Length: 277
Image 1 (cartoon, rainbow, N blue to C red):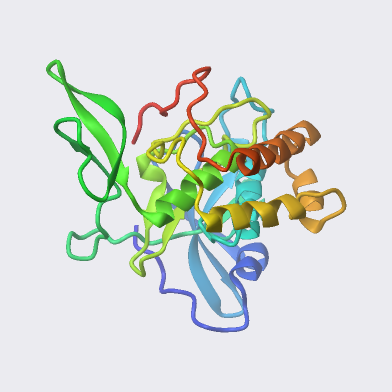
Image 2: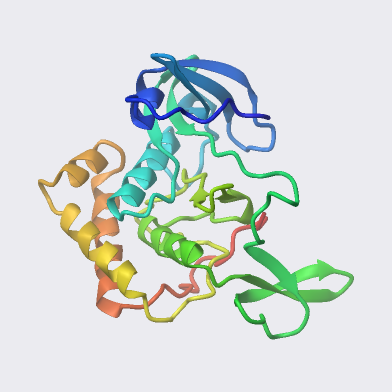
């Protein structure tokens, strides 16, 4: 699908556009397991493409309260913004043509080889990930063969690995990475997040056990302060996730600050999502 032109530099913010704009459904994204609708949104002469995920189209999950995935997507965006990294496109909760749901700004990813950014994940032969890559683990590639799954040693991915540990992302796949043409990296699909139990599943384990960079520790300190009772972020999250999940979120942030290292797989839950794409 081709997106409308980029939002021109006017006084309407992406949040205003997504919240107040007229939402028009153009089509459905067929690969998604839940209802994901490609839309346009228009407000005061400003328009953009967006994704609309109505709560009514969510498939129930055994380990999450029913009808809460849209709220979790918004909570993940709020956390990304609070950490100052802007890793998740602007995301709001609003009414739409099929009821209340999550609406997120569409990020256009280059689809030609000339425009595409350098790959972020790959499979390589042997045991050495090579310069500029971090090893994740071995993957079955068929015919009784395995290959080493690696991801780029990229600071944008590293920030995302920290964010995923904070929001307890249970489904960080390759297809959820959105490298934009301007060099920024965005990520999508954050419905299975914020569970009070450890659910972290990701392809970004390459830094597991390594020291967190100072910028990550600074972001975590800011976030810890903003999660305190009475702060606006804490009040906003109370509208989106449960009290137990907020307590678990605070505990995850405190643990990252206490240890000062990237999360390791717990061993109590599959560490890599399936399928990984």
